[in-house]
Amino acid sequence: MQSLRVALLNAAHDPADTARNFRRDVDADLVEFHAAGGELPDSYDFDAAIVTGSRSSVYWDDEQEWIAPTREWVAGADERGLPVLGVCFGHQLVAEALGGTVEGMDEYEIGYREVTHDGSDPLFDGIDTEFTVFTTHSDAVTDLPPGADLLAENEYGVHAFRRGNAYGVQFHPEYDTRTAERVTERKDDLADDRKATVLAGIDAEQYRAACEAKRLFDNFCELAARDAPPAAD
Image (cartoon, rainbow, N blue to C red; front, side, top):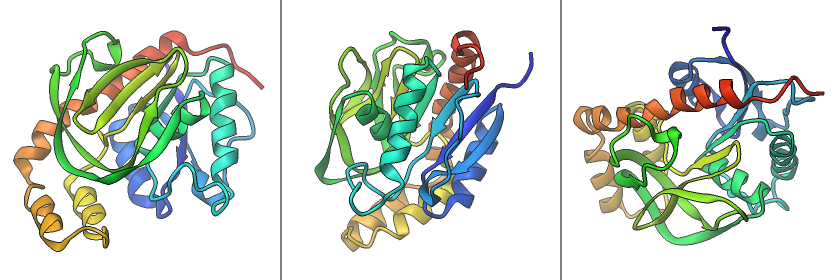
């Protein structure tokens, strides 16, 4: 089967590690655009798109001019039926682009956590109903887009949804231990004891458990191969 051509909208401000992680875990021809640097595709001529995590909040439009155009591109992709997967910030951006609501939380969810999916969607085929993931976010999808289905959640709220060919996952299936440690260490607004606890939990055993969730990238690519629309302008 010919490799899928996937637009990777990299929303990280320091994009190298994020690009490396997705290149390692997504079996597709990734065409990379540094969205946080103002780069976006000039067409929708792709088989699918992935929007990555970011240190930004999706509602910082007035401060960061790249967010609104990225949201508009995602909305345009959805209108064309292009399969889209958003991860963390990308999950929230996809939700907003489709009419959902994102709001700040009272605290971080950070570290290896348990999430439960309902078994209703092939995105989670081969993944245990309760599974381990690395999380790091202080914003959350508080209202799903109209017509969207909740797929996964935990005590912090929505962790996955779907509407049509658009998906969002709040957690980070692409993280390795190096990335998890680096992201945690730069959380200057976390109490030192909380940060130390999270860092102590980033180990080989937890990472092996979290690798199960990487299966969703293969599942998304299989869905995209089936559902991708004809080449568009």
